[in-house]
Amino acid sequence: MNPDFLPTAKPISRLIEELNKLPGIGPKTAQRLAYHLLQAPPERSRDLADAIVSIKENLKLCSICLNIADSDPCGFCADESRDRTKVCVVEEPIDIMPLERTRKFRGLYHVLHGVISPSDGIKPEDLHIRELLDRLSGNPITEVILATNPNVEGEATSMYIQRLISPLGIRVTRLARGLPFGGDLEYADDVTLSRALEGRQEM
Amino acid sequence: MTARVYQTEGIIIKRHKFGEADRLLTLFTADYGKVRAIAKGAMRPKSKLGGNVELLTHSQLMLARGRNLDIITQAQAIDNFLPIRDSLELMSCGFYLSELVDTFTEESVEDREMFDLFLNTLRELSSAMEGERILRYFELRLLSHLGYRPQLQRCSNCGKQLQQEINYFSPAQGGALCRDCGYPDMGAKTLSVNALKVLRLWLKCDFETARRVKLNNDLTREIKNLMRENVKYVLEKQLKSIEWMDKLAAEGGINGNTAGNVTDQQGSP
Picture 1 (cartoon, rainbow over the protein chains, first blue to last red):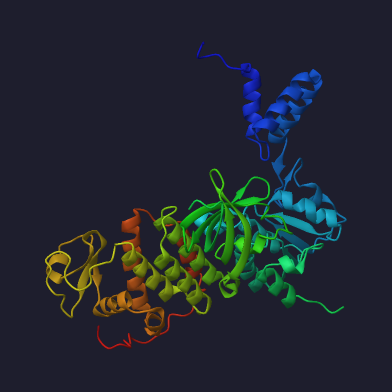
Picture 2 (cartoon, chains in turn blue, cyan):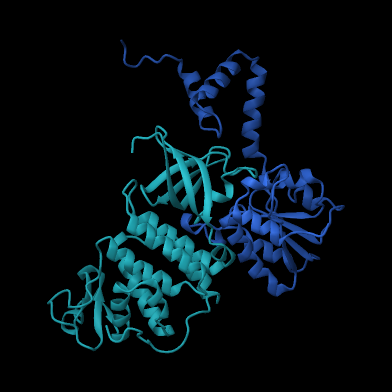
């Protein structure tokens, strides 16, 4: 048998290989997607390809909040109807989406693009903390809401930012940590439960 | 190690995102040494694992053997060292400790003594005001346990008994050097009488005693530099989490460092 012979044609195996690199896509899913695209009308693959290329070419970072957007300033920062006195600090652009879905927050955002993670060598200087501090001076911001993830790195990052902001006399709050809705006390871990007890509220 | 499911207690020393909501954990366990395992769905808010498999949590674990990586099926935190998590300084020490343990150990080598040392260190840290002494004691005990115990009784070069004077210390030579051997050695650092006393005591005492040793700022700094040199020499690299710990300390967080001279509770070692 010819050693160079491949069971699938080169372009297909290349596509499978590329799809396989995406999160959540295993080899089987990649194969299925590749053969699906092969059978779909050519416009569909072209649209998909264009969409993929354009996220790299047409997106930029908002110079104010560092969110990924198609305009600078981004939609949030440009929207005059939003509350300009509150800034919510998140780790990644993707964290804005769930917060927006709640429709409870009408303020502005600030994206750090990461968290402090000493063992990976990620230091405060690698995040956009400087930009946040710059934003706080000269703007009517009265409250900074820290919405980093409730894990060790997220907590460390929040504590660190809180330490930098508190001398400025601006109110710093942290998202409440407690029990998830629809959860079960039995399965709650001790840290979550103690935070939930600490943060209990009058009914 | 043939059963499909096994139980052990372990401390989470490292964790990475894995797939959509899974975490790849590195555990230091009591019975199997360092183990890497997957915690499925641990990043979801309602995960049963979630907070029980956070970094630096001491947990009772049930694991199922997988082809490459084991899978955590159940986890129940025994101690999550809340005080460490609540303090930026102590947490930076925690990050450092976990990196130390991770770098110094190989997978699947059982080491109960090391596990106990690590666990006691975390307990100690979570009831402490500052981590400085605890880290130094841990470093020394860790090196000594793994076969890198620095020679502190005699000169590592000529074997002469060390005198009550300023001696030298060289990780490359394996410990203390007397005046004659240390002075011409460019890689050696000076070793004060008090630092030598503290290190000798720490090599043989438990936490209880180690905690009672009071160090002034100069001595703290001296021992810190000596131990760091030693760790760096053995590992042949600098650990990443040191930078952040130093940054925090430089910004004036760490208070502790009580004044006063060495008071050696057990008399002269």
